[in-house]
Length: 207
Image (cartoon, rainbow, N blue to C red; front, side):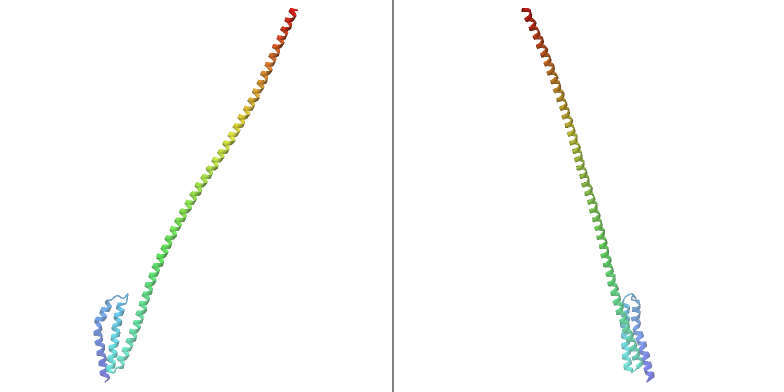
């Protein structure tokens, strides 16, 4: 009986190897980076364990059943590892997407900061230009006010000088008038004295 079980075990193992040969060959051609290869190998391992378990039950072979249990456990571990890898890949992809979003937001914030800085610089330059123009206007107004004040003082001084000259001329004219009147009075006095003298002489001649 033991020999029959051993021969049956060997036959099952060889048959499974033949059946799995194209499956294993196809799986090795798949990419190792992602899940297709692992998924194909997982399906093949589960089928292998299932056949060994069925054969072990049929032949009442504890070795086949134990081998089937080990292969089933290994397949479950491989499935768990595959699921964890898929989850890790998904998390890595989500992290990459989040990183890209963060980079895009950072770039947007950087561009916004540059625009704000440029706008602020433009506003500062405009404000400085307005202040400069206003300062020029105030300086021009002050200059015109100073020039106007100086002109007013010059006009006042000129007017005062003219008034002074007019007063001097008036005084000179008054003095000349008084001198002329004095001369006229002197001449009149002389004329009257001469006339009186002539009248007196005439009276003496007729007496």
